[in-house]
Image (cartoon, rainbow, N blue to C red; front, side, top):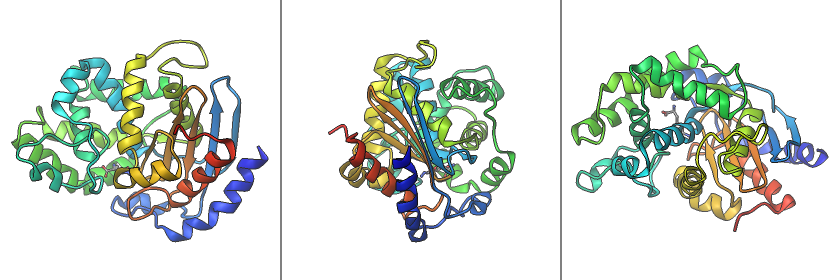
Length: 304
Ligand code: DON
């Protein structure tokens, strides 16, 4: 698609307004000015351009996958008794929200605190089985049997993940997190280290856009209700404390990650995967958001 190529060229320069994540040291190795995109329609047309086949770690976009799995495993009543669905107004790894309202549960499943709780709700006999269920579900929903974790990113995150440890132990003290904290965090660090491309993300977006049915073979893997919930939470909380501005500028259910990915689901139409590792102060891809703003305008994709 010429349009996609042109828009990538046009928006590449925005990378200079951001920085690659460095609080997970391995992520600092990314090439700041990479920008790529893939669009996949529900009828199977694929359009891709730029750094669309480059691998990067899924990071926070994995929170969408664990939310789907936790909802399938436990039902919405139980999941939402452990984690709420309100935007935080604070950064993705903020601890202040957890204490501000007395013994409040984590605000939503897409910030780190809420996602750690969601991960703790995944069923399995031990931590390996739990992580394997996340990996197998990811492979299925992204139609890619080769998906795996990036070991260096996993170790880097595990070595430096003290903020997440503090969130988790705090939630253990308020009884919102149950189980073995270091095992739960190990699963969380691994799920964030799964390596994907924009094509994989576009497929995940496609399944959400298609209400839980894999468009490529007609198999249902999650209920329509779960997809509705997940797309609603993506719309209100998917870009953290930039979700409001993003809704105004772009206007489609999306989830970002500090690896530079953005995954979008345009209901009943298509999925989009974006990669641009230079991030703004909120932890979202700078060039990626600008590219999406143009793309959504050109193709009239806003849901609003
Ligand atoms: O836990 C972390 O901090 C990272 N593994 C994921 C954070 C993330 O992707 C936030 N997204 N913008």
